[in-house]
Length: 267
Image (cartoon, rainbow, N blue to C red; front, side):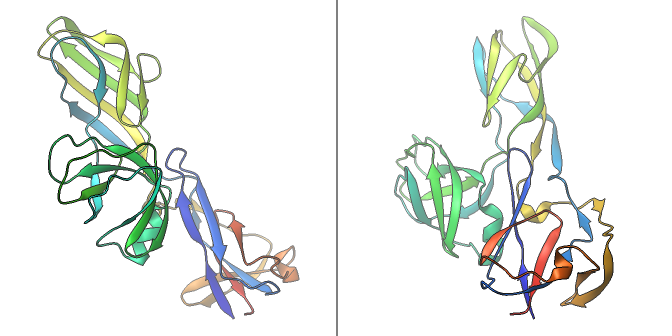
């Protein structure tokens, strides 16, 4: 008997979970399925409440939301990547690497000036010390000691922008009505004018780190004969239906729904 673990990736925009498996051999028989004791319809959203924004005096039409950056890894390279690049990293381990596939990131120089960040998506982690990035644009920097790959804020949702200045009475602006957001840049429909600005934002974002998912919907499988335990995981034994027929795997990899945690085969 062999257990095939299911790998999960969270869509950073919608919170949808995509689960996949690999490692089966064509012709293997599926003997059982390990279900999660609880499932999750989507990744939890986290509120960022009254985050202060630094806004210059005068007429302003765009504001950059302070990043929620966490430096996930620091590279020793000095290249200015563009297009699709595989970049060496330090400090990355195989166990945490899969959580970052699909994540939006930004590149920043660690030193120097003229550090113009570029957005990218982590497309793959080909090894424990490298990451493949799909770049939105070339990264420009005169840094001499490398750059950092930083986790960018997730999609800003349901944002409320509170503004106040020397000639604007305190008021709230709402996303998609009074302003739009692309990545972490706010574009205002009407210019924000005056001096001595006091500005904050409240918004939600989706945490796309799979390990941070909170499974909150109990799973009560019906149509079952019972259960067994393997390596601390509960295997559901089906009374009837597809799994009761012990089907053979027709492929060595594929996708599964969000309830399944692992597959048991006769390999």
